[in-house]
Image 1 (spheres, rainbow, N blue to C red):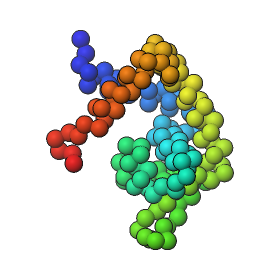
Image 2: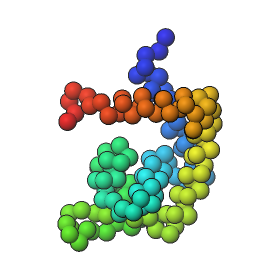
Image 3: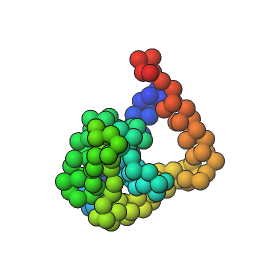
Image 4: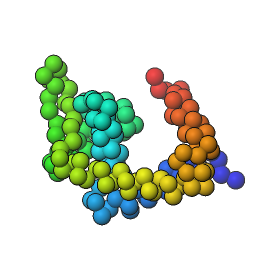
Length: 147
């Protein structure tokens, strides 16, 4: 019998591979999608996040977020600008091209999520909500060496 850690690792790997395959025609990797879709969501909520804020939102390492930001900026999908109040802070914004790429990608990933969660009753199912609560609890529990 597999341990919970092994099952979580396998499920996360299955998900990453599925998203990579589904988004390959759009030229996006899973990490790029997480970055762009999270930025899209934050913008819809009325914020212009910093790279640090986006890293915190996505769970990606700050250094990796910075690398992705440079790459996505070079590809014309986002704009990076210095915050006038603190020039050490870089603010992020989707470009028009970024919106053209991320919006259909979000729909593609939503369809994929529907298929993955079908055994639990779909995205709006009670079992899915319970799973989300349990996963959130695990994510919010710091490891001994975390602050």
